Image (cartoon, rainbow, N blue to C red):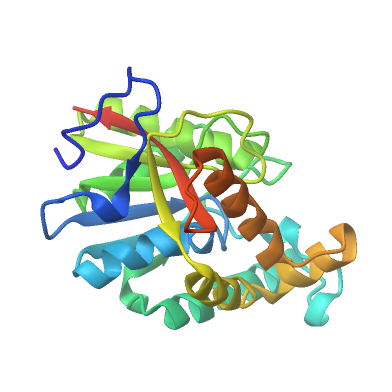
Length: 250
């Protein structure tokens, strides 16, 4: 099953995706808690896209709470949701993902804007996965301080176990990941980082919010994680890497 050579019990066993011999074609699902989580792992997804693998993106929530009040004239949650979804469409077009493979699930949320862990949301995730039968499912790691990231993983895991799905979960490092094991990484160079930064800046509401609140852009925030990953892995030549923990189901 795709990563058959992986031994997660071994130390320093991280595999470089670019050096693996993988079956083809693969069906890949990205469960993005918010608009822009797809873009955080764009280098890895471009690797699969260029191989001819089929990628489907499901954005679980609107991410309206991540837009500053009044930005680009957006004051209501509906306005903010529409803005963020348009940013995701623009970034997917930049990436080259066919828009028919982009779905906005808009899962019902609790009062804090996090998707509910209830039967309805479980069924919606189940229906989405069962209709696509993926080999790999990408999402942020569940050990994360962001509650929507936590619940995305929890909903996925509950469905995978209930439906006895046979697949690999590929859990990516994020700015708010608390801790994770690195089983897999995608190294990339400065030219790819420039491409990825341009894609990230298409999420203009997030880019401006980061500039206003953190003093650096959304692109710098994500790429700083990738630089640290490369340093931790002692890659040498490549300055950047996207890091993942793998979990096998079935």
